[in-house]
Image (cartoon, rainbow, N blue to C red):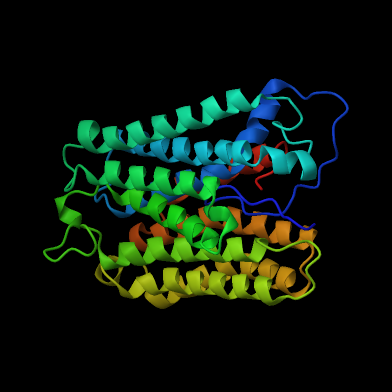
Length: 343
């Protein structure tokens, strides 16, 4: 394929879906789910839950959490929809079975849906900080982060995905999404010398690790199907490994260094074992970069984001309910994946 379809913002950088054209139009609700690429949205939720559970002690019922989840999902789904809107002509050539080129959903409807979701997400982000979370140390932080996330996701869809900055933008979206979950932290989680706008060093390290990991997944997937050299997939694998190492390194930084709920060496072993599966799949894709292996590696990597988030909360909180809440996201994600591809 001489011109590959570019992925949607910070979630689904996989190769072209292996799906034959349909003779009859599917139900409209199914077309909508395919347009939204709904299953992978649960990884955006896991980011926010992880960030929130890391920065609230004791864990409390915070109304702003629902607004943060709505903000993250709104911007994420908007990015998915607008990605297809801007790529409709390319999809008509390469993937005519997608909802827009197949005519199951009109481009104008999709455009309205995409910008509607984008605006809703931004408004929810500002509401989380200003209206719902009076105890936040920096009430404007959630609104500023969701605005930056929305702008970067839109910029990626419009053109960044076709440039060398595409993986950087994808990773940046993931980083900002993690920080969004941490944005309602109260004064007890703001040190006297806060790092980067009231985020502690360990929090920044976790967010960067998730961002680097997704940037690596994007590089791994951004290959043409006829490419014979494994250089680009190998580079993606290396970046993914760096992302895993950065997340693991957060165990030595505050607040994890003094507040972790399990021995650092035990946690590193557990996290290393959890990271082994996506890295092995990525290694196989790098060794023999065909579309099937690459897409399999991408799917495994996306599912691993939920598991990574649960592991980080395990480090900070121990085997508690929040860990199970995050892992439970795998249930609807897996169920929806039987109907809709995550990539």
